[in-house]
Length: 178
Image (cartoon, rainbow, N blue to C red; front, side, top):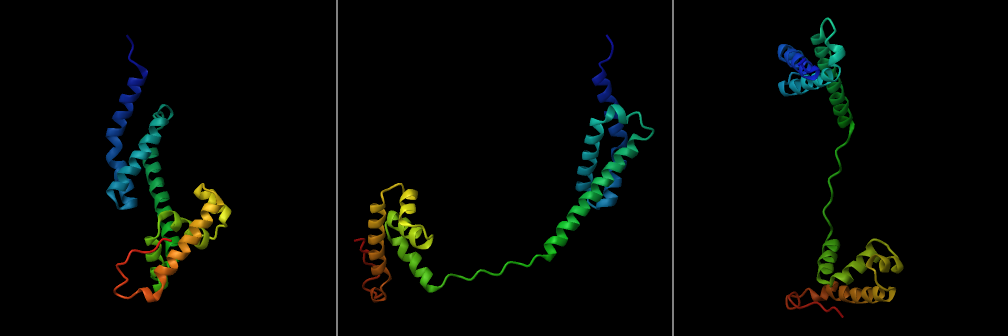
């Protein structure tokens, strides 16, 4: 029985790989200065060589082709990193975010005290700026229900945000959700 062509091709490439791997990695390492990156680039070069092996093995120096591919990949990688670094260097760092003011903190604290449906209605209508009809669509309820939640939520917020309720006796009292 004649030897299988694919097995012969695989053995031929494996022998080529074993004989040339070290020098290919050394060339890529000389360009990158990083052994792990050099090994990855060499592996990519051999992957490309394998897909062209039937043609490539007829070259006078197929190892030179693989080394050239590995070093070109290294240069391309270096150029991409250089371009990315230059772009990042031109970017300004983001402005530090300011913390919330006292009013915002008080509002969030008061909103947490409301029933969820009232809180959602108030946030969607007043903070997100949705009209009552859209809030009703988002909440999947009638507009009248949204209006009632808004009315009750506003009344409860008025009580929770009233500065006269910040006395020590009223801080532990249950909020009114009228």
